Length: 409
Picture (cartoon, rainbow, N blue to C red):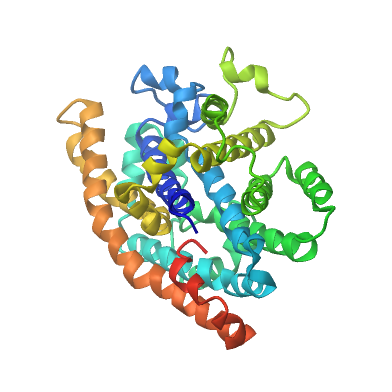
């Protein structure tokens, strides 16, 4: 692998880390400025706290605070990373091994995050979140977390419901709605590349998959897989070309689509993109997935962008991205909420929010470090051992390098 190619793949980890930070910011804003995130048509906000809420909602600049777009990036990255090894010639054994470890790889950290919420609510700390929601008018915040907890719920949600239960029933850690897509989307990718990865007509299969999934989050996995196929076979149309202007345009289009809002406010620039026979949700999913795909193309192809995301300070975020994603809500709903309740009546609302989020970030850093070291990393080892047992050491021995590089797998 060339230095430049290695940098490109490192950049993807950096992109994953930045996306995780955006999710944290998104949920922080959802707590304190819900109209900025959800607008006024979804019933998620009862109050306005700043004029910027009206200005930002439906504004392309909201791409930098869009948790939904960050999730789309996660999904496209998963489709790309999970299939790159196969297209690079590492064979069916690699795919089978990753598939064999996928459930445990996702379940063990997710289950641990549910236990954290169980302890927080069990110790009676959910009042911090509830009182904050009353003051900020965030109906989104008010409806999260269960009123009572039980061990039975912890196990049923952590082992089954987040993957196979009713979508939206992730009571203990709401971000776990993505686990269903991460697992099933991964299995879709594995099935397609095992069945058609070497077929000459696989591009027809890809076209059918795009048509079948364009209203769902699985579209992002499909486009990520297609990009991996192109990239691995040196058919990526933009790498090593001088079409930098076109690449910048692709990046800008991707960022523009990434700002697509949850609903369409009248007069928004995005209103013209609305496809009338699709639901609001389907429009959002499609445009965010396409936007994330465009951003991935730019990150791989634009040297300066790739170098930025591959830089040491950004790249390291990728190592902690899953941990950030899983533990940040518990920190926001306790630390940020608690500090806000202490300060909001003594100072300007915006300053109280800023200090509350700063306090949450200070606590989040060691919390993420501990979670990554004692939960996330061990889960990789355990899931790897399970895959070794399931498929035998022969498969594992051919892919020893995977163990060192599969933080996202």
